[in-house]
Image (cartoon, rainbow, N blue to C red):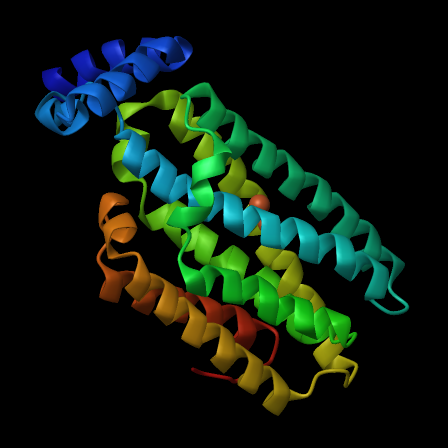
Length: 262
Ligand SMILES: [Fe+2]
Ligand SMILES: [Fe+2]
């Protein structure tokens, strides 16, 4: 590890244990109008600016809210499937934990939730609304496609492929992101397996899944186009992210025996 990074770790991690220091840096940014975080970037003194935290975490919070709501409602509508119902309740508990973690991190840095709404890409809201409509119709199959494959799969792509600077500059943030990532991997795997079982039982209409996946894919493309600054701040390139996300979603659907593409 470069000496600069080693020094940064010594300085940054204490900052995370003493968030008042970060709050002070963010406050100085606000008061002086000088982007201290950017100015200090070559020295990696802080993992991200207040803006980057708010913009990226706003989307993680939004995704967790969708997943918490979907998992909770799906537990009530999955038919004749006590094991799936129990797992969904566990999943809902984990989503609530993630949500609380993201919110408490924002609070810790003095970045209250009140301002989050204005950062969220409009197409992110479409994810939740589209899935809610399917749940209202009792269409648990497509609600699974929307939440456990697309929304959670997108979170995996962002957490695995992006966030490199945040990870490199703080062991605490890296540990926190890995903790969320591990749960999301289980949720996606569970979604893929449930869809495969339902498909084998003849409960899945492949054409309907193709339509809904196509709709969700449109929102993914729309959302990525709406937040180029967030994508960039996560160290990602939009075309690369879209390609990887599409490959990931379609591999999960193929695992469920569904040959659908967007
Ligand atoms: Fe989650
Ligand atoms: Fe999840």
